[in-house]
Length: 249
Ligand code: URA
Image (cartoon, rainbow, N blue to C red; front, side, top):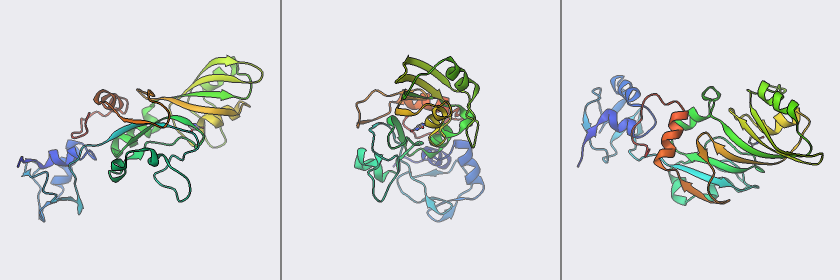
């Protein structure tokens, strides 16, 4: 039986950094086999399942990180009473591990969806202050021009907020239809569709190619676990200044 330090065990569960774990132990929030332990260096059995934080079991399993190529017509939600959700496309074992989508794609949007049970990293990736870029390929119902590029770069005013500056790269433009790459660093509800609507254009199709350092590289409907270097790159854009242990990256 390999014993490990209590602060390391808490950090390995991925919900907190090592120093946060130390603070929680010193504050008397942790019990081991019913006994309050306030010394972070105390050695415990990680498999005994007797460690509680605020009365809740601390588990010692590494986190899971997956990329999914979302098809159209499927909801980005953990569950829904009527509609099929993206969770139906994942291996069953992950559902038991509380793996959840990081942010949302609309029902008709296709492309890269990140899923994880690392709630800390998910939160850091979604907060607008970290400026994690998402890249979309959009088709529109009419022409785009330099004025649209400038408006995206300036930050488009919508009814309830001013969108942060975004990059618009026009690939093709004609009177009937255009195609463009859009890079945004926030993820408000219908954000890209609303930005184009503010410029008088309707989005016909929307496809996410990239989420921060991750690029979509699997066929539609499929999923794969992230590699260690991809998880490390996500941590870097999330500006994790302090390493957290136990996440396989
Ligand atoms: N912006 C949108 O409008 N929809 C999406 O699904 C993603 C970004």
